[in-house]
Image (cartoon, rainbow, N blue to C red; front, side):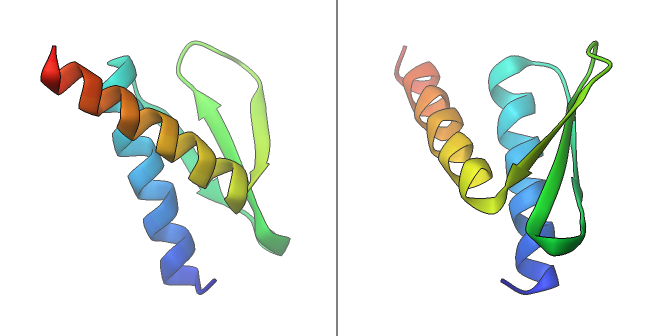
Length: 70
């Protein structure tokens, strides 16, 4: 995955999270394939791999789709 791909994945996850949850999160691309995810209101930061972000993005976009239908 290129650096641009990583940045796009981080951006897509942040946008989907904000659209579904109504509050922002921050995803930072870290070395060695890790992403640091922090959520507003929580002090801890989660470290995730790209595959975990992709899985989360699937869930978030499915929730967005359900919101649009309802």
